Length: 235
Image 1 (cartoon, rainbow, N blue to C red):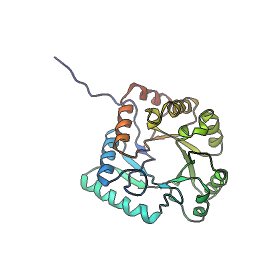
Image 2: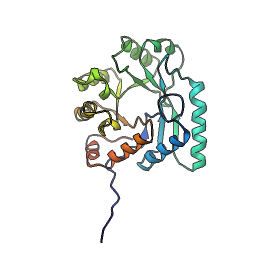
Image 3: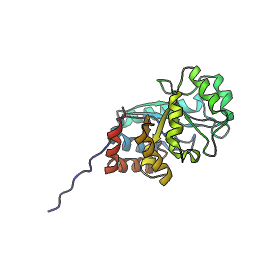
Image 4: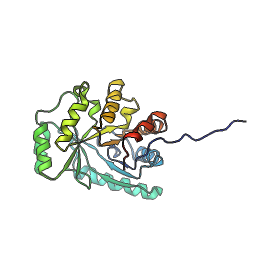
């Protein structure tokens, strides 16, 4: 006789603050069907609030309220029709480059609690990064740096760099996909280093497709995920 057991989920989080689930406006999902599939998978892991964060990277992905909010309303309508009891709101993931400076004169796409997700260019940090950080904080936003474990220029001293950012009240978000090894051994090692050093405030999926959600699910059911719960709990 064979006994089959459902894998135990080793780590739970309720709010996914970083995802790319609005189709056709960045490098995320390609359709609403894919959006719903990702949300179903993550909801089965306990996520009941999603903050979708399409890229804003001028000039390449120059999204605005006018491109983001109509798609958000369509997604909400489809979720209601599916009977999925989740909350979805929208912000954006701002790439800090010189093209972002003019955007600071208008309200930014932040989460309802004014959390503002920002990212570096992967090639090199922008010379204007400190200027942008000071400005958004002066305007009442709470900046969160997305996936520092992935930046090549953070690879050797990520905990030190993130400690300096957190000392300036810029919080840090690491991708669950980094813990799962999606981006290679360097980002994976840095994710664990940031966790163990206490220089990590949030984790999120940064899901761009169904395969990302499936990888998050596999990781959260793995024995490695239990280590996350030893250090902090995400609400």
